[in-house]
Amino acid sequence: MTPGDHQTSALDEALAALVGQPVGNGRTVAPDPVNQPMIRHWAAAFEDANPVYTDVEAATASRFGEIVAPPLMLQTWTMATPTITGIRERGGSPVEGDDAAVLSLLDDAGFVGTLATNSEFEIMRPLHLGDRVSATTVVETVSEEKRTRLGPGRFLTWVTTYVDDAGEVVGTQRFRILKFKPEGLS
Amino acid sequence: MTTSLDWHTITVGDALTPLVIDVTATVIVAGAIATRDYMPVHHDRDYANAQGAPDIFMNILSDTGCCSRFLTDWAGPDAMVTRLAIRLGVPVFPGHTLAYTGTVTDLSRTADEGFVEIEFTAIDDLGEHVSGTATISLPVDPADGDRS
Image (cartoon, rainbow over all chains, first blue to last red; front, side, top):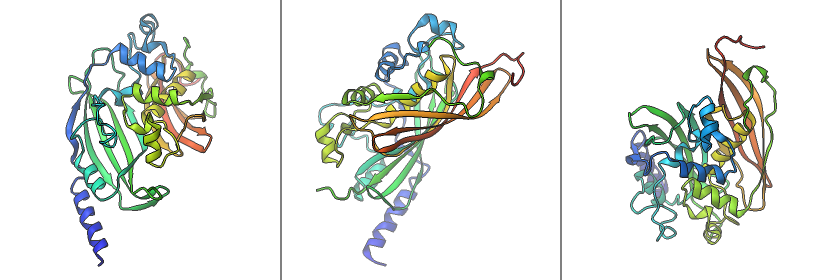
């Protein structure tokens, strides 16, 4: 066994121990309840004219009976409020000290590049104005090292469960990122 | 877009209304900030260059947003997306044209909901940016038969 193999296997063991464990603090509460300004901003960005998001009259007449948030906006509600100062120096991390153990392990092993590759949502119900969403994220899998077009990498998959104030599940999301060792960059 | 598709009139093989997005830096930045994704690769070209990318590129939450619009622009305001699975291919950079196309692959229903399974892709100047599948739900009258 070469020292390199030994290092890889130690990393594999450390990563394997994190499977099934929460990512980061475990539970993230949305900074704001579901609200019209953020929905309007989101719909404007994608030029989405669906009236059930912003037009009370049309929404009332629809199957939903009231304004709803775009179901696929789910992930946006629990995104961290960023500290803009220093964001570049933190490699894009929105806030200080939010690095999940699994990401730190991969970063420290040289897998500093990050690329989102898959996102899979199941939506149980649309969100209404005033709903407060919380998210719990758990590591599902970490792949072995693979050759990718960007360099050697590992695929990290986590599963987030989103719940409302009552603790009812409103949606789930499986999210996969590639952590890679950038090649050809100097 | 004030009327929704009648689930009974949809058939397997139907094409969704194509969606073409002329992607600019503004489109990418607007989407990143509206989805509260402040990773600099989505708004800071110098930073993106230092990461080996030729320009800023669209974030995955914006892809989800574009998919949402693509699906409900076609099906109407009573449609609800209940499932989405996307895989990212090549990135989208400013100056690209991003073209969504999709097809109905299956239909099913419960008493008051009709479901539509969809397969779709989004192609940009480099190739396939997104490939995915989705399920949307449309309201149906429990008194109506399965298919007209």
